[in-house]
Image 1 (tube, helix red, strand yellow):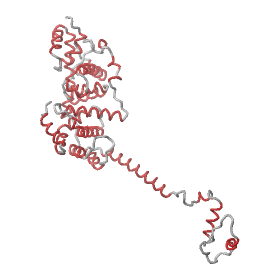
Image 2 (cartoon, chains in turn yellow, green; image 1 turned 180 degrees about the horizontal axis):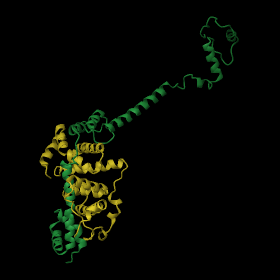
Image 3 (cartoon, rainbow over the protein chains, first blue to last red; image 1 turned 30 degrees about the vertical axis):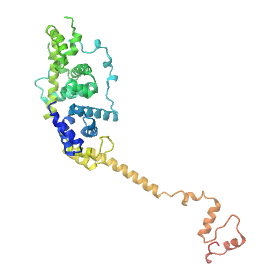
Image 4 (cartoon, helix red, strand yellow; image 1 turned 90 degrees about the vertical axis):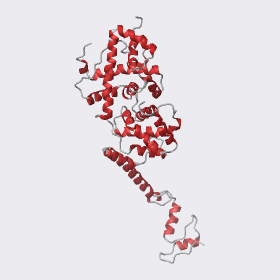
Length: 204
Length: 191
């Protein structure tokens, strides 16, 4: 992680001792990244603020259980994602979980996309503005089942290691690898379905 | 090469991410040298990464950058130290929410919510008033009067007319008094 964990640890210890300013500094350090992360689960600014706020409040309550050798940010991501998913459930928007996704139940030799020739993905057109590409990617991500969106966000957006993703999601590294593989295949499919124009000029 | 494309393809992403163990990478590398289809799959993986880099940058400093409401960290830290555990539904600080909503330019949803709360409060207040002004069942009310036993009505009328209560079987003396004309001196209380 690019942020000094030792510094995080000092702020965590001071927060545990009841220092409000130290906790405020911890919140300040990660609030922007938390708002950006939670936006992958809802676009409503009021809901995003509520979820991020609850994330930090829960984190404060659970500070005594924080393992000092782990990353505070990874720990926070786990709380944020669970809070966002609980929020969706409470609003009746049920995110698709692993057991409900039939394609996760396929045997390994029938996994979609395991043939190298099954469609190509182009790089974004150089003529597109950065923000345009970002909006397209965000739109495609938003259409993926939660289980695939989350793993892609943690890897490609948060740039977490497989070990960190495994810690956040409470799964094995092997599951991270296979879920990420399937998520990327799904992303490619949705991208080409939503924007077939990007595939037209592709020659292999 | 015994190593098949079906085995190789699911490993390519982890290879590009630098997350493949040395032993597995040693299996994949020679396959990639020999198999152009799997090399294309690796190129796809790199293309895909180029869709995500702009998303990160845009969220950091571009059109998708998230504006954190001002004073957010101070507000959250204050709540945390005050014992708010982040369980939704125990929010009560409307002034703070109003301030943050105004800052964010979304006063309308806040006003709508506040209006709904005010309307609910007014309704409850009106219901409360109606309940309070409603006669209790022990009071004498127009609707209740007919349900009273005849004897009770009679004694009530007697009392209003300044006459001693009339029992079911009145004594002769009392019945004489009852028959006396109006305007006469009020009788003494029952001895």
